Length: 279
Image (cartoon, rainbow, N blue to C red; front, top):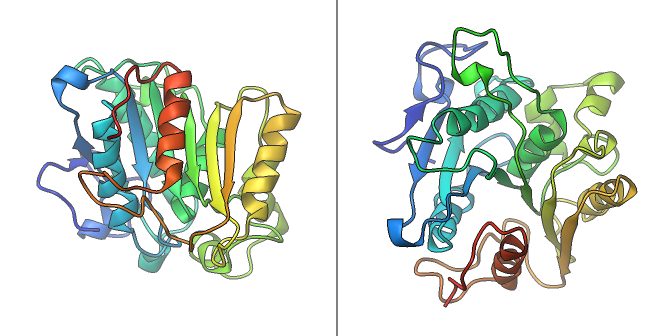
């Protein structure tokens, strides 16, 4: 995924734990705004997948452009990767900073501060689920206004997501995120199904039965945890579709996978959109 000319550095100086000053050392946000006449005031931070080794553009820019058709502002996160020798917590730091940045600049971007969600696919779904279960309230005493903001997403959208670092994990994602031979304690910390609680935000979750890349058990276990803690969710398992399916359609999105229409319905139920935007 290439950096766009309008990309925003998440930190004006080096990111925490930066290993250099190359583009892959500099996490960024790339904003995509809907037409003003259909803008709803909602925003979503988009985390592309790629096994924590690369970033898949069809799970980044394509999702952002699709969300724009619903009147939602989207911000694609370029986060640091295991292929460039980064490990946890660098990725979570980048996602949290991205969410805080959107919240801090909400007035400038005509966004409602309580309508900022997160969306991720595959390993990007793991990153999204990590922030959904490991957010914090911010530091009110920080001189950095962005760091004063809380990093809690107001909702989550998880697409064929890696959830666990345990038995049903995606091994490539685990290695890129945690390195070789991670400790049992670290595996437990990043197995997000273990960290759901009553304050976890509502979620839209989908997977396919045919997915051979990331086991369906990831989504099943996360949904079970949400149910135990009485957290609202919408959950869909579609029979057909390979891992990495994405929208299965390109702009202007006249032909997309049914999950996109189901997501539109759910977002309307959350009062994040008000009209039927999909053709």
